[in-house]
Length: 141
Image 1: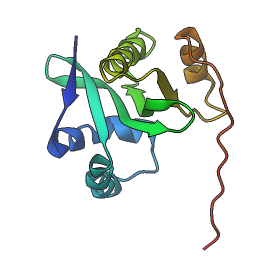
Image 2 (image 1 turned 180 degrees about the horizontal axis):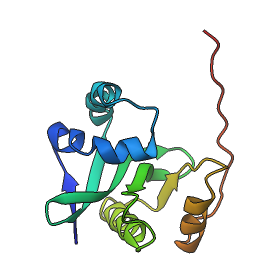
Image 3 (image 1 turned 135 degrees about the horizontal axis):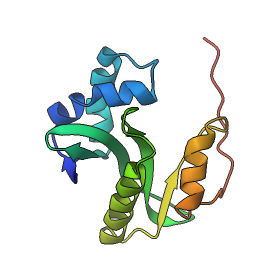
Image 4 (image 1 turned 90 degrees about the horizontal axis):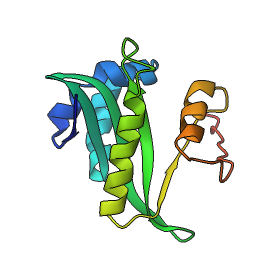
C-alpha cells in the first residue's frame, strides 16, 4: 500500500467511484463540473493505492481562519466499501496530519454528519474532538 498525492484533475476524476460511495447523490457529470472549480480554490486529494488501484481517498484544503490561523480542512474521506475497517482511513488521516505539520498548520478541521456514527468513532480514536456546531440552511428556490 502506498499513499500518493493526486496532482491533476484527470487523476482526481478517475476516482469518481470512491466519491460516489461517499456522496451517492453526486453524479459523475456534477463531480467533473465541480472539480475544476474546487481545485482552483485549493482543493487537493491523496489516494491510498494497492498497486495501481485507488482504494481510499482524502480530499482537503489548506486555508485559514481568524480563530486558528492556517489550518487543514478535510472535505472528503472515503475507503472503498470492500476495504473498510482495515485501518486505511487512519493511514490517510496520518498522511494529512503530516502534511499539516509540513505546512505549519496547528489545526485540522472536518465536518461529520450527526447520523454518521462510524466515522465519528474513528475521529475520536484519532484524537479529534467536537469543537463547534456547524449550522446549515438550505435556501428555498
